[in-house]
Length: 355
Ligand code: SAH
Image 1 (cartoon, helix red, strand yellow):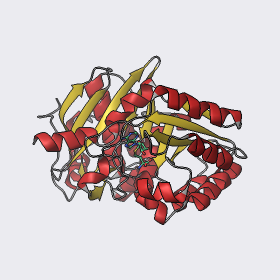
Image 2: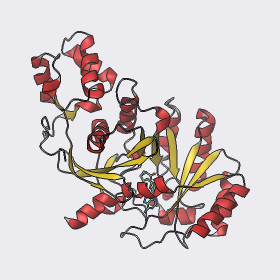
Image 3: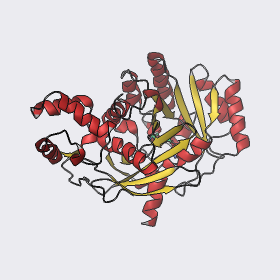
Image 4: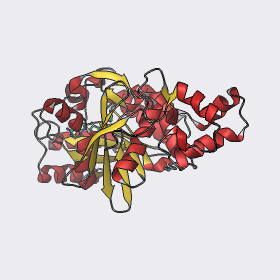
């Protein structure tokens, strides 16, 4: 528990200092008439030494620290509680400065520690099978709040994260600027230094976001939640499909791959009797076969909010086989996938039920 941490600033008019990019920090220090090395010093305290409050920044003049504390919060978020689950992932519920909550999950695996980060409080997109959308949407997170999720994850778990997936609550491309800012901050060589290829952004298929990301020149991984091979079914499962249908979405993905040379991973939650028939597999294979990509099959994580069941292992194997025969690389997301289910709004939802 981090409750009682010194330096927690609950003032809502302040912004999290961890959300400033290096350039923004340089501009800020210049505006305060500080020498040019000041920004580098502050950056080191924040992202390398990862100190717990302003007072620990011993080489920064007290007057500057006070001035900064007036406009910026240090840790604006507190861990409300954390829970290790049977699969050894650590789920943390964090209380934000305005009383809202988000969750993040630390998922250990051999030689890697992945943190599944939330990008919004709630979600607007209301996918039928996902717990996150059920309680509606409240607000987007600031870049600093997302960086803080990682710093809190490190403190709570005791190890530095090596991989980050934006697969917690919310839609990253509905909060594009803040998510990209957070990516640049955590990717900075001097700091958390998480390599771009170790950062995954997952989208429900917001085409303008895919197009923008293609132009960023970043090597981040992109996952697209597809879950159905045609508009009729996908619209039933994912209302966002009314706006961004399967055809235009796959065109945008193809364009992304051509422009960046990077493979997209399609997420496909396998729901018994809903999207897991042989004909669904064939239809999906037909649409993806001419296209360099990967498919991640994830047996549905059964949530109270949705009556659906996970497909059986036999059916998942049939799907992999049909896709494979068409030349589409499909894998079952096993341990990591089943642990990641914890991130799909379920902790927040179950917390709300208990409250
Ligand atoms: N909004 C983003 C990221 C958040 S969800 C997106 O839609 O991609 C991360 C992944 O978990 C998505 O692929 C989502 O469709 C999937 N997911 C949500 N609920 C699930 C469930 N009950 N079982 C399996 N996967 C689920």
